[in-house]
Length: 235
Image (cartoon, rainbow, N blue to C red):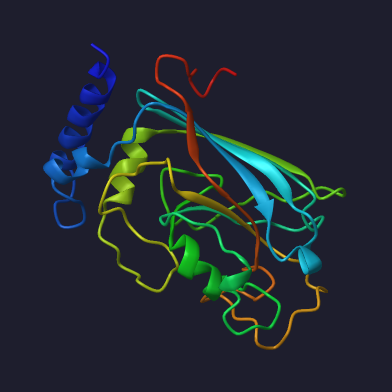
């Protein structure tokens, strides 16, 4: 009976989509393919652009159990007292020195996208939707550290992630295949406004080049099965 909880969640997703707006959601058969395996997923973060943003480090943990999706991020050494956007991205690799295509000494947001792809889950204050009117990301303390934790119903999150993408320029993408946390990237953004960035540094649409500068990246690996992992409410 190992997969009972996953089967029940798939059934719930199908029912919810069938009762929802058919013009904005995927079909029940396609949404059932988006579930990720239960378990604990860990990403160890390594710094990017450390010469302008410091030696950012930390870890991110995703726990999936039944209908519970829990995200936890512990960060050290970021630029202090500023907001740091943090997203889970769809591709399978973090940027390297070779990602600096224009050779200006900075891996900017546009160059980074070529490695880690578009964002699929913004790790903000509300995981039930990609877009919200009052988005809040963590703010680093005086030492450049922060801690983030959020839980969400997997069913609610998946329904939102399969809606029609009405804005192709918002740096976010909807799911068309399995969520599959293993192999996804988490990226932390945000350099201090007084950081010396070349004119050639590109920004994401609607953001400044400082706010959208990638400063850390890590790849999620599955480190525990559903039998050994705990729910998001327990350690």
